Amino acid sequence: MNHRIISKKGLNIPIAGDAIAKIDGISIDNGLVAVVPIDFYWLTLKPKIKQGEKVKAGDVLLYDKKDERIKVTSPVSGVVESINRGEKRRILSVVVKKENDEYKQFNTINEHASAEQIKEVLLESGLWTGIRQRPFDIIAEPDTMPEAIYVHTSDTSPLAQDYNFTLQNDFEYFVKGVEVLSKLATKTYLTINANRKYDLLDKINIEGVEKVFVKGPHPAGNISTIAQKITPINKDNKIWYVKPWTTVFIGRLALTGRLDMTKIVGLVGPEVKRPMYYRIGAGFMMKDLVKDKINDEYETRIISGSVLTGRNAGIDGFDGIYNDMVSVIKEGKYEEFMGWVMPGLKKYSPSRMFFSWLLHSKKRKYSFDTNFHGEERPFVIPEISEKYVAVDILPSFLLKSIIAEDFNMIEKLGIYEVVPEDFALMEYACVSKINIQEIVTKGIELILKDN
Image 1 (cartoon, rainbow, N blue to C red):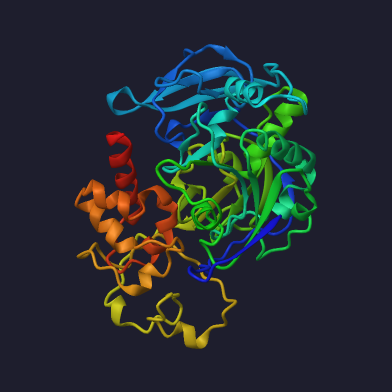
Image 2: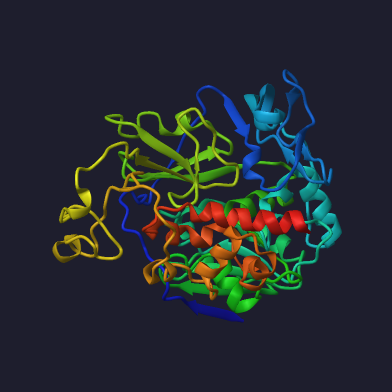
């Protein structure tokens, strides 16, 4: 059975720097890779290793204090270079210097493996941390039975990867990963971005796996938008979802017994000289990827992930293990004298505030930067902002109830159905320059702490 979802709410931001259909290999010059605990939301991670200790790919680096079965493992083999800590000794990163290609051997997963056997292998290998649970977008709870699992290839965010192209050489592993995941829940859905060509993904025909074709502007492809129409999320109804390259990692593990986290990453954005795809191991240092590939005339922001929701990694920072995009845009450290009264012939505005919409083609791409074009103002949510939240809730009332810390209203107004990324476009278009995603995160944390 196939499902088709058409969403009209949202916006495709016309940002320059989409990747061309080319994949190149790249090596890690300095041998440094890292895992960054901030990418594993709501885990309390403790170190299993010490600085200077040798590890193989798949050896445990960190474990969750609340559930020691959940582990974060090394993506490469080598020596633990450093364990970096911040305030209150919170771990910021664990850096490993790659020296060779040794792999810890795990059990393979055959077609007769039970759900419990699969969970055991995924937990031991560390790939369990790639399975996310909704509500709240936390790492999946191993003892929970989800209503459904979504394999999420329908990303519609700006400059998102074209999985129909990038998964070609790893298609066997991807299909095997979907087969493995389908045994962990009664229903499995493969979400596909129907705005693009999808003939490769359409070839997947696995018993019990249903396809969901999603069409419309971003955030049509978000899990929240899809799940609300197929398996609505609430306090007692949980779902899991897995990203495409995590699915590939699971497929490789199932067939080879090795944790091989090689993936395709898109280097994209208006400040990239030639946006394209690169094959590289997970956890790489940003300078290894962007070296000689981005404009160096001025300061840039290097983002691990999407321009709307990614983490500002910086040139010396590290990639998020499960991200598949590095976005580069100009730092907007400038002021415009009376910019609010200028015609804005070279600017883009979703509200058509500037005259550029009269002069430029709809196909034109813009070189966006990080400038706010104003300061934070009283929190006003006009109708134009609300139309960028595709989930059927009352976003402005939910945000105000979070600010007021009204627990009952936060729950009634839909906190279980959304995550910060569902408000990313609303934040982009917000005339008050408010960090709306931070407010939603606060709301989620209020509910999590109360449970």
